[in-house]
Image (cartoon, rainbow, N blue to C red; front, side):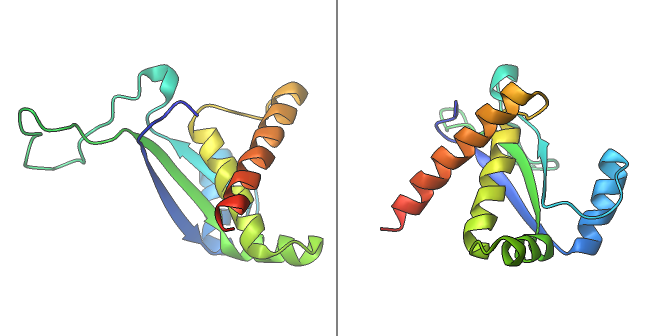
Length: 135
């Protein structure tokens, strides 16, 4: 995906918290399943940043911290509800949403039919890899 080493923050929230976040971020009512907040993107150089307020600068010769891709926020309630509605195991649907969010962090979007098809295909491809990792 363009990153050999990177950090992703994952936040799990309730529908109430997700609805507030969705309203504050996009002006949309109600909860959604996943929202991604990118920080460093590959096309931006992804330089990575020290945590704010860190008093210890990177020592000379030390490896810099990995770039921070951003934060993926998933509503556990929405994920469980949508899993029940579709008959999909909620853990797999959760993985699907997490992958979807990570793809947003690296710059993919579903703003056009072509981009939507590409993002959906890549999400399924990565989900198949994750499923195979458990074997």
